[in-house]
Amino acid sequence: MIELGVNIDHVATIRQARCTYEPDPVWAAVEAQLGGADGITVHLREDRRHIQDADVERLKQTTQIKLNLEMAATDEMVGIACRLKPEMAMLVPEGRHEITTEGGLDVLAQEARLKDVVARLADAGIVTSVFIDAELPQIEAAVRIGAKVCEIHTGPYAHAFYAKGRDAEAPAVLVELEKVRRAGEAIRELAMRFNAGHALNYYNVQPIARLAGVRELHIGHAIVSRAVFVGLREAVREMKQLMRAAAEQGE
Image (tube, rainbow, N blue to C red):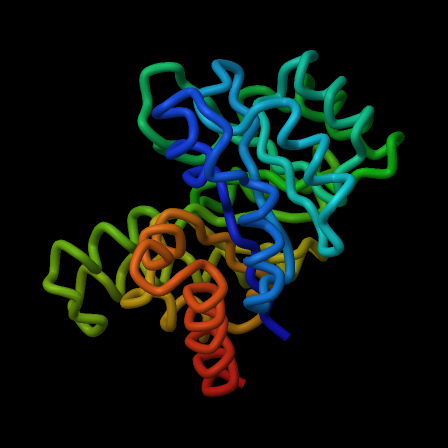
């Protein structure tokens, strides 16, 4: 059954805008869980622009659903992950000047380094995911380094969806959706878990949720944005409902 991982980074973004103590990401995680979230995702960036070290520690202690720690493959982040032991660590590319993650991790270009990182995380009992573009060479590299999960970058699909007036049947949208579908098929054939995420929202999520074998979607900004108007618990509930309805149609 398809699952929803809620990214609460931007709750921390609001807090950091005033360098204060509210809103609390841990409270957000509890509200997300009560709304039906299956997991909580946070990205501990090297520049600590939103989520802070103390947030991750408190989330690990408090949340009763799985914690997915997005992180760059640096020695510092691997050390933090091995100490805190989230249920999953997702390796992502990271740039200081980007607003949000702009593309998938180039696993192919750094296999030796990433294989060592995955091994260190596995020794600590942590499942490793890689956030990659929908490209077969990257998927094949992911299995070689020992990743158990591939999260396909859905940004190109989401941007095409928006550019084409939210028309799910526009040729450009269908091209990007097909790339994600074929990537998911390859991931499953290689015995890895197929997840997806990035720029998914209440309008574009269902075609992705309908894809065969997709296990988990990670969604943050759209849910936090919706929560401004309806509250986080309701925003999560609405997203989960859309995902589940679409997944049932795809079965």
